[in-house]
Every structure is written in C-alpha cells, then in structure tokens.
Image (cartoon, rainbow, N blue to C red; front, top):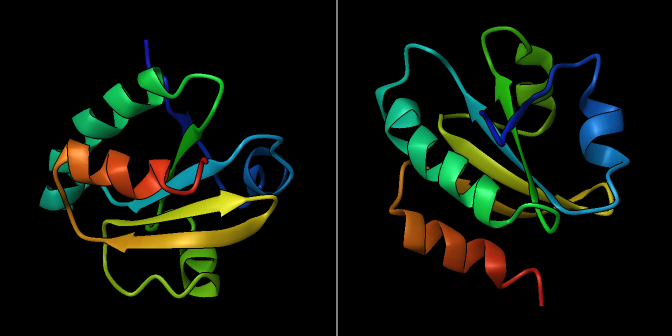
Length: 108
C-alpha cells in the first residue's frame, strides 16, 4: 500500500495548499533516475510521518505549469508546504536520514 498521494493541478489546492498538516511535494518524472532512487525513501518516510506530514508526488511531465509556478528547474525537487506556503526546498536525490532531518527541523 502506498503512503504517498498523487497530486495534479486539479487536486493540488485541496491536497497541498489547504492541508491541515505539512505536505512534502515530490516534483518528479518517470524517466528520472534520481527520482526513482528517492522514491523508496519517500514511501518509508510517508509511513513514518503518518498523520504529521503528508507526502505528495507531482509528475512534472503531466503538470508542467505547477512545476514552473514553483520554480522547479531540475528534478527531483522536494518542496515542503506548511499552511499553504513553501517553507523548504530540497533539490536532488539524498539519503533518507538527511531528508528526514531537513524536514523534521520544520516540524518542531
């Protein structure tokens, strides 16, 4: 069972901007090797954060306008949204523990 949620331009506002919990959005694409390497760590973190942080995936090939709106120039790019505002941006694949540390810093 996947703990991440797929978002698109149709659901971005309700799933991300209006969320009562912080949302980490993974801007990714199917053909992106580093994105695929990061996916298992994001699944694990989504399970660990269940209820405190939501992990959403946005395919930049399907929703390029949102990627442009948030200034995504390379993928994977992860943006943490809190109260509808971007509060952290991480670019590139990274180890699960480093990613967790970066996001947990915003949860205290």
